[in-house]
Length: 349
Image (cartoon, rainbow, N blue to C red; front, side, top):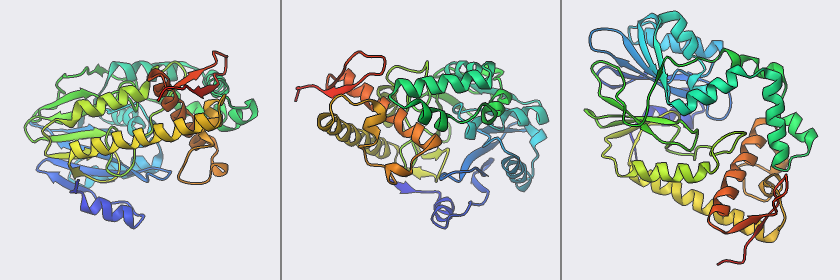
């Protein structure tokens, strides 16, 4: 795998935010800061034939992120009012969070996959209180003690901003062409990270806007959630295989840095999950009758398990559940059928 976003990687190593970069004539990468370990989102700005700009993702829905996006557009000689359309790779807050403000400031249309549009609608239609209770119930169903589930899920007040998220004007299915004049971007449906995750492949340049499907350094979180896909990790591994053979000149990810070597990176990500599945299967053998909440505590994480709480613990447990479900579909673990499934390894080899 070859790094092509050198300024981005240098900024990462220096714990900074990279500069606005010209990626190709008429195409720029604008880093939009966000909280947490990922530090920024790569919003991509495309100059359109006939005037105006297009965006691929917008960034985290916060005031400082909004200021950074506007400053980035100014740096390339544009303005948020010039935006004609927004392509959303997926519904997560760091990618869709500013889309509503962009639309209000410019009148731009916003497009995403129908599956993510449906999930976003259910989030915005649901009251913060109902949303909180739904997540608490789901965590309890994975084995969390209710007190821990409530502490991790947070308060309804913390979810109030979800109701202000954008409703898309347009829906894009796999293979649909995006309405960005001067570009030949086609939607590539890559479920896994979310049910409606989209990448965008530009047929003329060979550029591949990857969202969070393929990142150069980390594996994107693949998790279960209430009412979500039954086997999201199987979906994700299938999506990796589906894009591996594409003729791609350069990968433009939603985080970290640009790179070449899509096929190699998809192989690395598949191998990572197979190692994770093997570690989880060993934990299920050593600790039979364990819930996903229990099993997560026996896996290797980036820090001691005792330090995990709130959203990080939710991600870890729901990712563990996604791996458990794939092991179950392979016949390697079996649940006891209870309201809170307790998993044990089978005797298959």
